[in-house]
Amino acid sequence: MALMKTNNAQQEKFVEMFLLTGSAAKAAEIAGYGSPKQRGYELKNKFKNLIEERQKRMLQDSIPLAINQLITMVQSAESEAVRLNAVKDLLDRGGFKPVDKIEQTVTSIEEKTTEELEKEFKEVTSLLQ
View 1 (cartoon, rainbow, N blue to C red):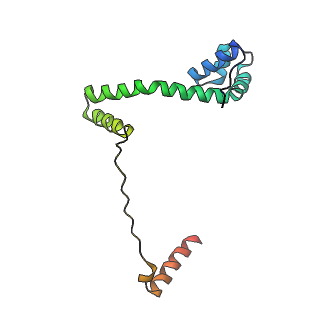
View 2: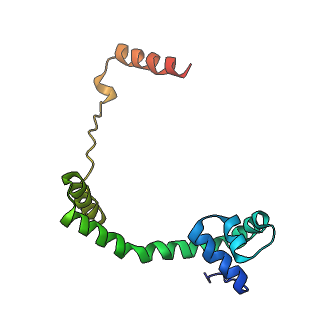
View 3: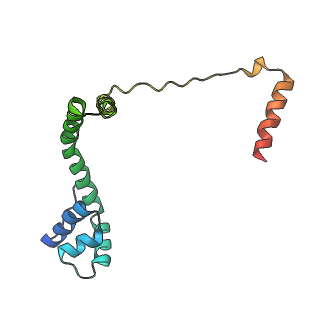
């Protein structure tokens, strides 16, 4: 899918400012549009796909910095709790997240008496009323 582009420098300025501020009205005002609330709303919708694509790219570009920050916290945070959480986060992101164990008990209908099944049926149906 081709990436939508802005048509002029003012629209490009709006998109850039929206990505930095998160406010359509503020971005439209900085880009020099009159009626910034209305124009910001219109431009945000018009360039929705472009904005989302650039947001994803911004996040992807910040991943190395975030990982380096976690490593720094692992190595030099004064608080043991901070270091421990940083280690857990690094391991999780590296694919070493512990498996969540779920205990599941399966009972067979054949093992229950008719009376037990009727009692269970009444309990369940009473919850539905």
